Length: 595
Ligand SMILES: NC(=O)c1ccc[n+]([C@@H]2O[C@H](COP(=O)([O-])OP(=O)(O)OC[C@H]3O[C@@H](n4cnc5c(N)ncnc54)[C@H](O)[C@@H]3O)[C@@H](O)[C@H]2O)c1
Ligand SMILES: O=C(O)[C@H](O)COP(=O)(O)O
Image (cartoon, rainbow, N blue to C red):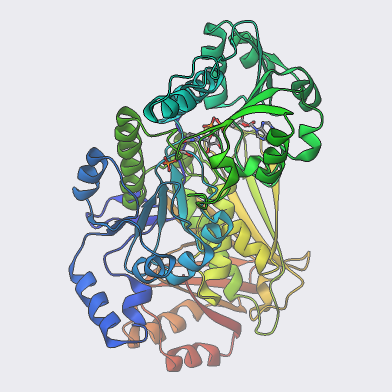
């Protein structure tokens, strides 16, 4: 099933509603409204505003088909071998960045982009060169091309395994040096030997398949791999200890994470079979290179074949690279013509799609929301953001918003409603009006946590047809005072409730009062003694000011008692008009809210 990431609902230039993860807009609000520092920047920004295409910086060699695809949608700047400083300078002029494993996309890169960088495309699998936390904090989507180079990497793993076992590179170098050393380069056979595949994912399982074809006995260690997948390939899953104790060959195929960093260290090498042979086409960092050198020198490890290194390129004096029993290649695992063409196309499609606001199936740092969930929740996206904005505006100055409860009422079963998207939009509504942070599906939970906002979710399961995903949504802010006392419900929280009617968001409850007003433009909330003539008085004040009323409703507890009037207005009333409304004798309190 394809999955999507979404975090904003935007009106596209051709007036179609488009679910836009990136909100890429030719007008560039943050730069355009606040031109920064030098005049040159301002000029660049103005030129950019006239140019409706986004800019994609391709920082490492990418297959031509990918470049061509990017050019159909964006200005493409292919600048290879940039220094970290040059990358930071360029990035503030780019909407997207495409890299391979050779470019470090650090926190400084995201900071230097000043909010313009909306997507980083990793043309390959490993995203250990991208600071994912920084990307998420800056609301920048990271996408990769996780499958296109799997076979290339697996084939390279097998190439290294066989070349190492038969001393191919050493013998080749010897012959080129004019020698003929048949006795020196006697190899070892693979058939019947045990290969331990460390990391039974995409590459690991393809290596396992191929190694079985070579007659090897294949075991695998992967704490997260399903046993049935291993069984299907005829591979036994074992624990780390058993893999170390029984393997004649060990092949690395796990990602570099804090848990796998230096997983092969002195301790691990002290438990392997003496004379084991090691292949690494995963990441240099999974092996402690100093420990490997010691193990090679002491004969614990007979040979190693390495495509990847802790530091790339490794320093010239690197002893592993120069070691007689080590075969090396310069990170070539993904480098076949075929793989690079597909990787380039995949990443170009993902980046262009993301910039257009389409679905990003390979997003690395955004929750994946399946497309059918997204399309059915689309009408509620705007409702939830507006409820968040309204609730926030009802908080009296000086009360910090810390505790927010969201209640979703639906006839669907408890587990049958994915609310991540709606939660992100409520967070957006609560945070964006009072900060400079652009909140989206990528960074919503992080931003809420960072600001000390605790958002809890509750479900009410209603009787009725589960066809409609949601009946109503309630947002409550606890432990705060309100500038409109009637917005506080009997349980003591600021409470607003809404539902989607005819595809449009409506406010249906404020505090304990039932209301009904379409959430468009601005809103006047007014509590008064229910008596004839009030609606007329307020209407005339607004009419005198040429403020158009688009909706009006009155919610009351009982006739001639207190009532709450909600008035939707297209324009913002002047202070004078609001003052006049406040002076109507029956009006007890009122507030104007922007949606
Ligand atoms: N040399 C190259 O050019 C090249 C090319 C492609 C991939 N790679 C690298 O190969 C590795 C595997 O890529 P993939 O596409 O198969 O990734 P993958 O995510 O499909 O597979 C990784 C597997 O490692 C497992 N794993 C995680 N932690 C583990 C642990 N502590 N111990 C054992 N297994 C663990 C995961 O469960 C997963 O099954 C990555 O590091 C990737 O960057 C290198
Ligand atoms: O993680 C990957 O995809 C591989 O290591 C390939 O990296 P590369 O794109 O720099 O060749």
